[in-house]
Length: 204
Image (cartoon, rainbow, N blue to C red; front, side):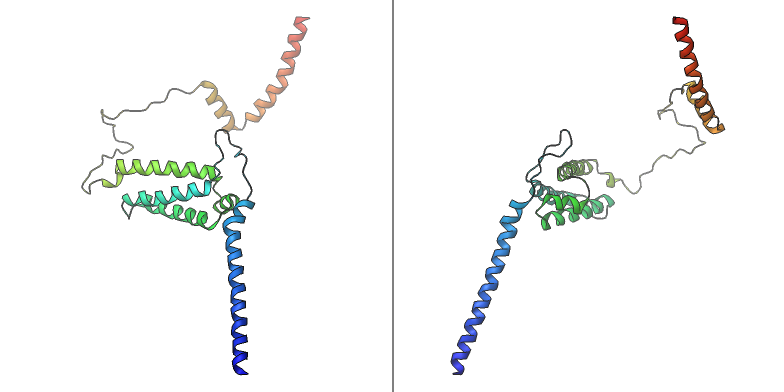
């Protein structure tokens, strides 16, 4: 009797376990197939010249993974590398967690996914330039020439001398600082109708 009861209990547990596995498979199917199909299709970015990227999530994951790989060429203690790694890892994590482009845009709050793609592409170009320029490779004994405000500028340093500003600028500035600007505007509004009226009378 006990043996039959044990077998029945074991069979019931197996059946329950089978139902749980079946539910898990259904959930996985919904996540992998149904959710992308139910996601809203973007028809336009609303930005001239910026085309919709249907597989934007996959493109972003690829770009962010490449960024984290390329930035390894920058010294680990450099602020530029730390900043790039920080926001790139965050964005990559969001893209890996979400399938819907709308949710990705909402969580990152940094523009549309198409704009994020352009930013990531530009970042990769900048990383290449930074590696080429090597701004962190300045020798410790390098001396930079510093010019104080009251010191004469050496002849070998070009000077930028802007041209003179128009006289109207100084008149307007003086009116603003003296508080007479509003009076001048009001006076001009009163004078303009009178001038136009006089002009119309002369034509008659």
